[in-house]
Image 1 (tube, helix red, strand yellow):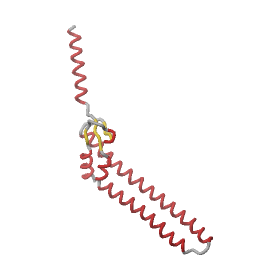
Image 2 (spheres, helix red, strand yellow):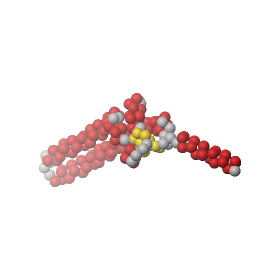
Image 3 (spheres, rainbow, N blue to C red):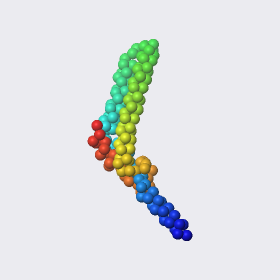
Image 4 (cartoon, rainbow, N blue to C red):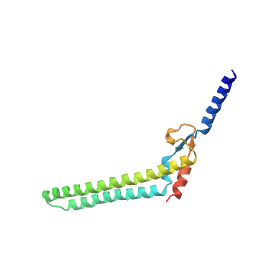
Length: 148
């Protein structure tokens, strides 16, 4: 009987130690991080500028199109502009994907660093947390401000 009590006591201590060492769940408000991250703002401006450049390209080409006098010239012009626009659009999409990945990777790395520092087990999106957890959003923002 004494051995059973000792075994139960040891089991209880082990269970409590496991609970005490559990790091817990952190959560991050990704939108708030983006709004406060200068590199993300800069990337967004660059992407928007490229989009405006494409719009201006179309406006300029429309003006040129109106000045053409024959259907053959118009068809040739449409084909050429279509190819040029597809190339510009591909460059725009590539730039947007590249910048979005860079921003995401930097935020992800900062969040991982905070997770390790705070000994958390997992980081979730704040949208998935109903109650509990640790908000690491301010910590990630701070880490990104000082990252080079």
